[in-house]
Image (cartoon, rainbow, N blue to C red; front, side, top):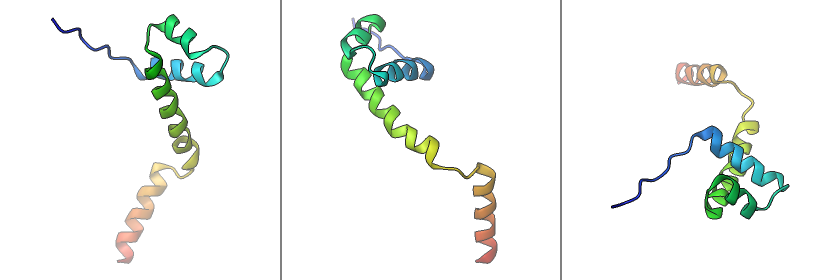
Length: 76
């Protein structure tokens, strides 16, 4: 019989990845505390690092982007 894969919520992934980025505990300690493989924690840390640039990189709001897209079609 196959074991079912665990599905973790985004909040949980963020919490674990952020704890790994802080560096106060080793990956092994975090892995033992939450019962998650160390490779998975490293992957979540990488995703968090990559996602931070998206969060802080785009200063334009969605409304501004839609407005610019509409203006572009009107000018065509």
